Amino acid sequence: MKAIPMRGSYDGAVLSHKGLSCPKIFTGAHSFHSIYEYLPVKSLKAVCSVVVEVIKITAERG
Image (cartoon, rainbow, N blue to C red; front, side):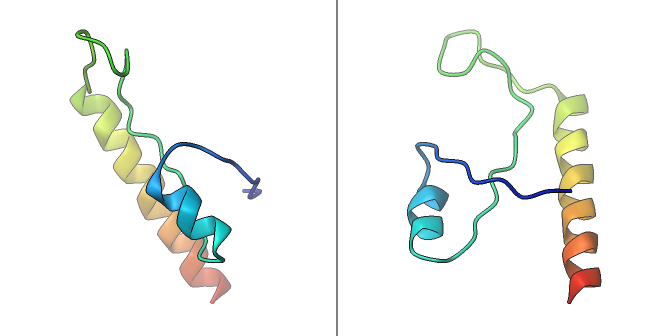
């Protein structure tokens, strides 16, 4: 996994700019900011799996 810089309109961008790395993790949602926005349970479970893997990799690196 390669870290790449990313800028977005979220609080983590401000913290990252100040030196505290904040990964931007996808939510799995669709049709953002519309009346059709939704988040399937299957997508949310996929997000959880990704977060667990990120934690494992981070722990292995110390």
